[in-house]
Amino acid sequence: MRRAGCLVAVLLLGGCSAGHPSPAAPPSVNFAPGAPGAGDAYFPTYGNGGYDVSGYDLKVRYDPAKRELTGTATITAAATQDLSRFDLDLAHLTASKVTVDGAAAAAKDDGNELVITPATGLRIGKTFTVVIDYGGTPGQLANKTLGDGGWLSSGTDGALALGQPESASTWFPVNDHPSDKATFALAITVPDGLTALSIGVPGPRNSAGGWTTWRWTESSPLASYLSTVVIGKYRVTTTTHDGKPMVTAVPASLPATGPAAKSMARTGEIADFLATKFGPYPFDSYGGIVVDDNRIHYALETQSRPTYGQGFFSSDPNPTVVAHELAHQWFGDSVALERWQDIWLNEGFATYAEWLWQEHEGTESIKDNFERTYAGFDWTQAPGDPGVAHLFGSAVYDRGGMTVYALRLKIGDAAFGKLLTTWTSEHRDGNVDTADLITLAETISGQDLDTFFRAWLYGKKAPTY
Image (cartoon, rainbow, N blue to C red; front, side):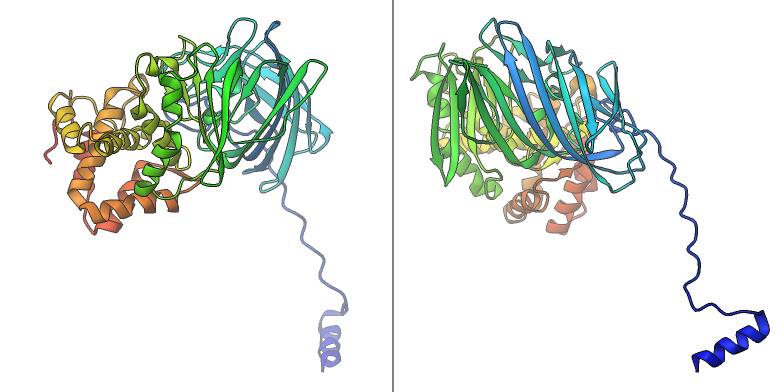
């Protein structure tokens, strides 16, 4: 039957082919540069576009006496467009060699950006590996919110890298925006006698030629500002909690049994309490690091191991600040921001966690905390869109915390409890915005909450409750 069909074609068209039709010419590829920012309205130059990082593997050496840092960063990423070139954030340091998938790539500095042009374009969806040798004298980044962040040298025997909303780019090449989360591995080499602390699970240490290499691995993806390194003379306590490593560290300059050490010792207890409200602890390790540096006047929820300025423990133990930073392990770290405008999602829930802990300790009820804060608040400040200058202002923290408690009153304890655990489980290791929370709250409660959230997050007068 098939040959008969071919015979008709021969008679009508003059030929018959037994092979396949010629393939169509492949479409031309329009390679283009990745965007020099992640598209955040608050910080347009933070982060970069065109790719998505899945992991950072860092090998770093720091000489405190010379204040010199050298490193090799191996970055695994996937192209999200057809890329002709792409940027990484890198401040104060210079790349000496760059390869993409083993081939030499062109690289140039453009302010705090490292602009990389691979030998061939990267097709959308392609996974690629960038290896960067870099070094120099690390420094700080001035920003308009929390103050200078990034690398801080501490005399001739220490240093630390810390800060929000940016800090990571001062010590390794990075896509420095929370919307691009990635895993993190660090091997850092420092002179013998110094401790090099970071986040995640501790690995083996080895010493050679007067230098010691410390290893840390965070297998859950993190926003880049949640990485840290702290170098100095520390008393380190390593135990196991709930089957996971617990590493706490207090500077040798502070008392061994003082308020800071006593506060760090409660880390496991506080995390366990919060887990009864928020669901299982989301990471593979626990801990905390206290820094004795007057330039650090804040605490930061560095992933799995928060970092605390010693001023929080100047006279007495302070479990409340520990509760705040540990709450961020769920709200801000595991469930991270898609954009900085929604920072209240981090700080509002962490403030509410402080109130939970104080009620648990019997020092003040959540209701009393809420009503005292409500009575004295300046309602012209709104947390839903605070602006860059007020990114860490009282509206984000206090009114954010009041919004969380008011939501509990609005939808009831049962729905609110389900909201907390559903939020942290469904969005674990992901990124969110305010609209995601509103959608989930309405789904669980069965209520239309648009008016409620408009009043509490964006209104300029005291909402009713």
